[in-house]
Length: 393
Image (cartoon, rainbow, N blue to C red):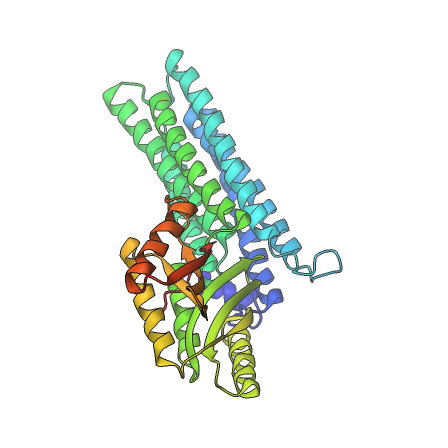
């Protein structure tokens, strides 16, 4: 069914890097969600009213809010597809993240309301009228929501949409919630014990837990989540496969929304190499990232002296001393400035985000370690935080 809908309503469906095609996927998912959820709301509200079940009625209201969430998602995709303008030169793709956050907030609201109504049902229990029509409606709802979860998850992964993945998680929650309501109705009918309120509380807690997780996931890219380690390693390998590249460091990736990523990185090359040749290589790497990954890459070229073996030996031995302090540390941009009484080693040291050692103590330990190599060495160290440090290999 998912493949059929994509073929019928989306032109050039394979071109997901195209903003218009991506928006078409979002619109399709939005319309599917609106139609299915409104139908489920109508039939469940009827079943809940006839049976007097607070959990079924709450489940119906949940579907109504899901329809609202689909409208929000639809609006988010429409706004995200707006082209860049003078006030927003990086485009409007982050609207999609914001719409995903609003969906997560709605899920929390649903969970709170369900918790309140279910607790009231536990305090003041009333019997639920059992009939097989209600059972059939709930079974149908489970299958519809299961399909919607798979549909949104498939489309969400295809276009890398956190909003649709959040919507898929919400549909999965609905499957669990409706199944619990159905089982409670059957147990209550045959065991003559009212579980309606208790099941409602359990479902509400599950929805609240899921909502908190979804808020965290949708907030991460807005706040500036670190790039995926596999993606970082892929960037490193793609850079290092070019002849003339000696190393990389100081990678930063900025996410302005799906399909709108910018990055900068330092690339080390031999200082003795011809400048125009190295600049041409850097240009080729930048163009390759834009063509292959849709990533706007800016590369800073760092010259490294390779003709002097003594400098290379100092760099290697100093790096070993630094990693002995903590294997996650790395150094770059080493300059050796000899003097009459001492030799300055000027370099940067990159520390991971969770590194707890104070900068002053780290400088002192590295300086002490450097003097073990040569007592005349005096270190001038700039400590840098790692945004997405590439391992030097």
